[in-house]
Length: 408
Picture (cartoon, rainbow, N blue to C red):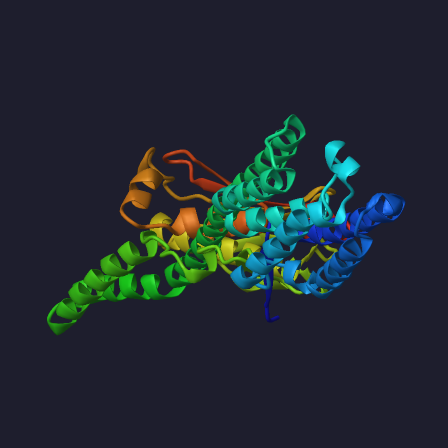
């Protein structure tokens, strides 16, 4: 069954844009409410009314501009800050003298902070520092002097915007790092999957050609030698290599993009027994429950492939005369498949040596497959007493429970 690709866009800053959208609307209403409540104190209320008409129209018309980083352009930021600064500088013209003495709010009031926060979210703390400095200068000009209240308000806006800008920069860096890590993990898993397929087919064919060519001799020996060289080169290529950085993890303004390949949710469970039945023969004894052993298709396929890889190792390392046994157990919490042989066993340290030489049969074809489906593989080998491989897939991995049955 075909897999599907799911594209996820991760963005820590997107909630900040949504919060800023709401903040601008609420503070616009708050500024208008302040004006209405103190209408009789304004010397020139028509100036304030004209400004608030512009402010309300600008705030509502530009809501899409603060929906995300892509829409929030530099031109918009400049015009938005200009609206805030204009309101601050118009305050002495509209406000009554006694209100200025009492150090009342400016016309845009705390709406100004929204313009500065847009700079912080869009460009980081440096942009926020520049915008808040301009707001501070405008407040000092409209007051005509540097008062304690003015310093308090300016520092509050400046510190808050710089802090938010710094947090946004850290969040963007974290998104890029996370996207890069997920991309490397996905690419590594795909490389391991390809390596398993290559090990189960191409590498084994090359190894067989090398052995048969050496045995036949003549021109076949040369062909076998070339096959051996290609086998070594292919093992080196499969076992190594780094994943190059892609544009997906470079951290666009909209957040990092991660592509994940997942199995279809409606996959019909399959019976593990038919997948293992072809392995039974004169040299392989298969013992399985009388009832279906149900697994998700992907889990069943990978588990059967791991069993096949284990049997390939028996034929390759235990010799043609070795006998193997496959035992399938359908437990309440897991499906367990055990592959045992009566060969000479594996010398201590041989697996680590083979892995270092690029021979990844156990590491990838067996343990790698089980790890990908949430299972585990344990290998027990005693020299002279054969090898046993226990493959366990937890029941929670595939979420399907067949009827338990005893091995026959």
